[in-house]
Amino acid sequence: MERLGTQPRNQTEARATAGLTPTAWAIAVVWFGVSTFLGARGFYSEHARAIPLLVLGPVAVYMLAFAFSQRLRAWTLAFDLKELVAVQTARVGGIAFLAAYAVGQLNPKFALWAGALDCIVGFSAPFAAHYLAPPRTARQWFLLVAWIAIGVVDFLVAIPLARICRIEDPASMSALSRPPLSMITQFFVPLALIDYLILSAQLWRLRSRSVAAAGSVPPGAPASASYGGRRR
Image (cartoon, rainbow, N blue to C red):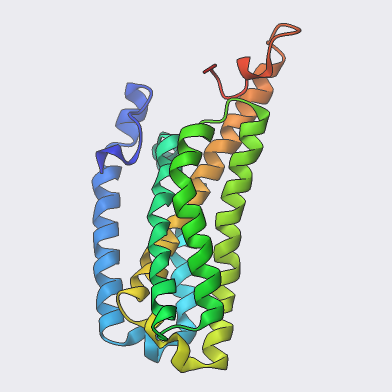
């Protein structure tokens, strides 16, 4: 989507990042289609051990591309911080885990952990986007970082927890291996993790700029004058 990121700051960045938006859309569409097809054909059920790799693989690929491609960095760092936070609203879809558990189709330990935290992050995302992004004070900074940490911890626990629950009782996790739930784990979870990586990179850059600019703030000036680059 053209609104995946804000407009580049200058014509040099515009030329450097030209073509990346349609490329990203094409990758996303193909990825979604392949994941849906594999889930419908029972691939995830037959190769359950490969699921963590398929979840974390795209994230690892993105991290390598971000590290080595200046063009990709310029594109992703131009995204609007407020929109990156608001994107996590999609995690309200985690209520599907709770619904599956309610009808006896999903392991309760996994469903309650993943579903509840997904809902907490998803329902709080619009408020975090409105009140915390971009952070203009140290308090907003730490609140936003804490909010991101909750979302990341959810995944860091949910991924191995799903593996443990699958070993203990494979039948209780079978719904997670086929659509629609498989689309959450195989497509939307990696996307959410990539979104968090971009958020973290932007916050790091913002923090670095704020620290660098702190020396130029007149003595006695409020912290918000330099933190985040502008006042409310």
